[in-house]
Length: 454
Image (tube, rainbow, N blue to C red; front, side, top):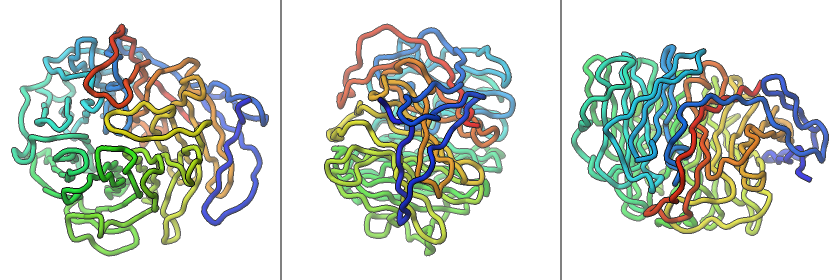
């Protein structure tokens, strides 16, 4: 039997709490210990009957983002069966999507070549696609709220030949930030660009925000708080082998990335390096630490960081959470994989659990994780810690059937506005560790998965 609660230990806190219950869209789940997780009332909206499914490129974690809401419209980006970039748009409150095929394409066998999109304060759609140590692919829509894209163009024109892991963010002014790695795995640097909606021009804000000094790379994630503070978390990787991942690191900026500081105080002298980075939590190499971590922020500006790793040698990896409170970093153990596995090697991995999405309630009184588990039949799970002082997680299924190698990527605007998790959902496969080939299989439908963890 699958337990209905997952015991968590909070740093310097010992105790046994009551088994909690969780509701989602009116469905009560996980009341009786020993009962398998029930299916939550998550909703699915069809987008397209056929999308590329031979790799996890359309539904891979660590992207910012393939799904984004601006005003009354939600936008989605994914690859069609022939590797073309497909753009979709719907009006909020309606289930019908308008879909448009672009002229852009990529090698869809390599799941690194994900789509990242955002809408600026004037309503223009910005799109980046197909990056794995390759030249920048970037385009802007021809008019506000349009799915018709202009010709590809450069941003700044410097350090745009070896781009990987592009991420778009919008700040309160409607301006944009664009974060990416320049260089290869194990020897890269993090670059930050800024877009001004009035001038419609990109400028370089940081040529070298985090520097691996030719010996390592930072695998990062960033989130923006309600006050526009940038919260950046990363792990170091010493080589292309994922087993060399170590430590959770942190930096923040209150002026749009112009200067950066540690959470505990003290300004960074840029670039941030291994010797100067603030360590939020120490994790040694060969701990099954997955990259990148995920960072989220409460309304009060408190950062929360998660990934999965093994706390002790031989222990099954778990989705642990580190957060900053009362002037220090605290640790919360989260849901563990049912069985131990080893995370090692290069390329896109296909472990038995996906990377998670992390959702923090506005008052930081509840946490939610969304992930896929092969130990649960390949279904999507939602896990909730209803009180940070408690020691129990509850979890339930968001899908009834397997989604293959799916991973979550959240529409940040929908979570910020409505407290809803909106994710692209597709049944896909992923060749473990080999980005040169994809599985030869039929295209599968792609949908929008909506979960409101009430």
